[in-house]
Length: 180
Image 1 (tube, rainbow, N blue to C red):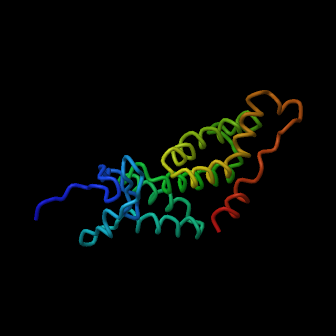
Image 2: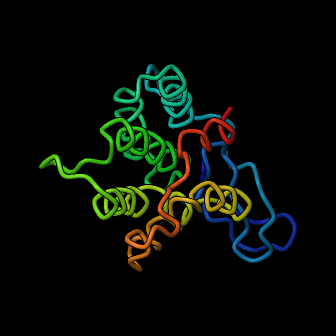
Image 3: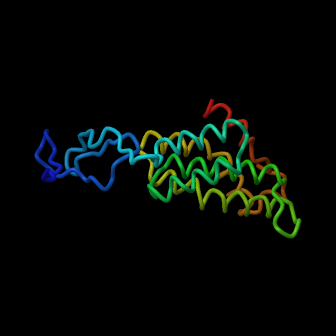
C-alpha cells in the first residue's frame, strides 16, 4: 500500500503530518482547516500518548503527583510539543513548590526566594505549555498564571519590601476552579 500525500480538501495545501495533536487532528498550513489525519494508532501493548496523558491526569487528580510527573514526562518523550503534558508538569511542580513552602535547596525562604521558585516553574513548564497550546487554551493558561506572574514582577521590582502586592494568590485554588 502506497503512502498518500496529506493534501487539504479545502484549498489543496499541504497538511503537516508531523504536527498532529493527540486527537489525530492536524491543520492545513495555508487555510488552517482541521483534518483528521489518524483515528487511533496503537501498537500491540504500547500505550499511546493520549492514553498516557489520561493516566497522568488521573494520577494528578488522585493526588499522586510524583507518578503524574513520571507519566507526563513519558508523554513528552512521544510528543515533545504536547501542551497538556507541559501544563500537567506545571501543575504538579506548582504543588511541590507550595508543599515545600517555597524553600530553596538550602532551606531559605522569603519573597525573593519564593519569586525565584515560582518564576523557574513558570519558565520551565507553563510558558512551554502556552507556546504549544492553541490560542484559546493558551489564553486560559495565561489567565491561570496571571497572579503568579504579577507576584514575580512585583517582587522583582522591589515592591515586596514596601508591602505592595506581596501576596501571590492561591495557585491550587485557581487550579481547582480551572481543572475540576
